Length: 165
Image (cartoon, rainbow, N blue to C red; front, side, top):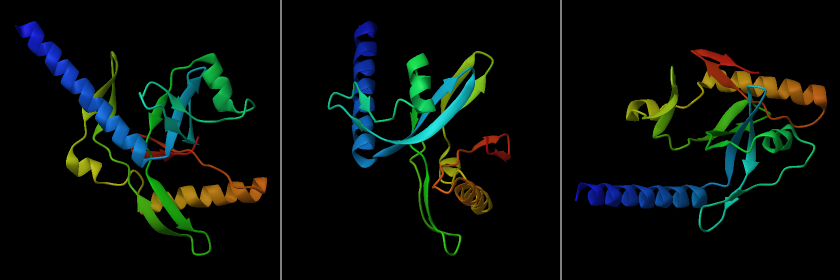
């Protein structure tokens, strides 16, 4: 009897997960794709869509990209829904911010990474402060001026410090 109840709970959780994935994939067209190479993380923004059965996620990338090389070497990836900011280039100000729906976070530990529920008060805060948004924006503008084309700037936190790799 207990085994049957556990199986029903698993099936219900699996159905719930599929429902949430369908809702997420139908409401989002962009995600951060995280890969790695030689122990170094790499993330890039991709436009994607999923198959109806949720077994496949599709996106396009040229064979000349680091993303393609990383995927060819190791197919394991993470797909993250990022916060998005629209910035006014002439005034260097934030026009809009679209937060991602954060319910969980990954916590490193001695036996690997575990998924934990994110407290509501923590999930309501933007991933970047206004000061940090401006710093990332200015860095992107400097890179654009240097390379004479639009640039994507990746960032992360090391403890409380903002890091631009």
